[in-house]
Image 1 (tube, helix red, strand yellow):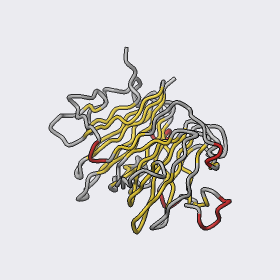
Image 2: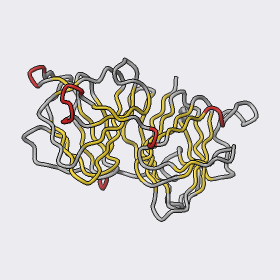
Image 3: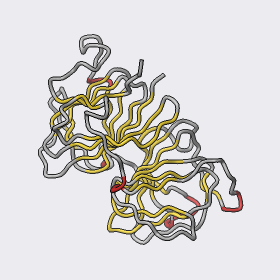
Length: 272
């Protein structure tokens, strides 16, 4: 039987969880981190003020565990050719980002675009815009920046997917969306590796619904829009781009929006 990492449902439909709300404290299993609480430090301290800034979301990029963090670039930033000791995946949150071989033609990726960078492969990263932020995640740290003379081939191929080229599924194509196909809620599958996977969830501007999870490693980052987390305690939190939330075990998170723009949420989930 196929295992479900998480399910998006409209309010009132709550049949996807394997346990009832009476069996688990759904509210206390959720952790919210507004982007205003991000602590920014140089991504590569050796470069001083020439380094982009990084802010941790989950894990520890200097440790060995899976990690997600934000990277902030100044307008016109362009790195020298370099490599990383580990592979990473990334999504543009704000501004425009180019990531490729140093001799490649520039391909500027906008909000919601997705790319991967294989370990050991020489590349550059550039950014332009008033504000430039990307979400980066690794499966295992530490995350290091090394010179190109340490390059190596690990067998992976890089991926650059502009937001306009993502393939979207509605509820008629994906069992992760348990609502009417008449709604504008859609899902784009980005990657899958073993028991872990990453998806981009698109929510309409006037939605009210729930995210249900039975994943042991549920992490989510707001990429665009400003959805509101509806707390059972009455303290609702607006989640601006770069804000994140996580859950452990069986969890239910209520979201709503009354704005004029749709929301994009990156979701990473894992089962054991």
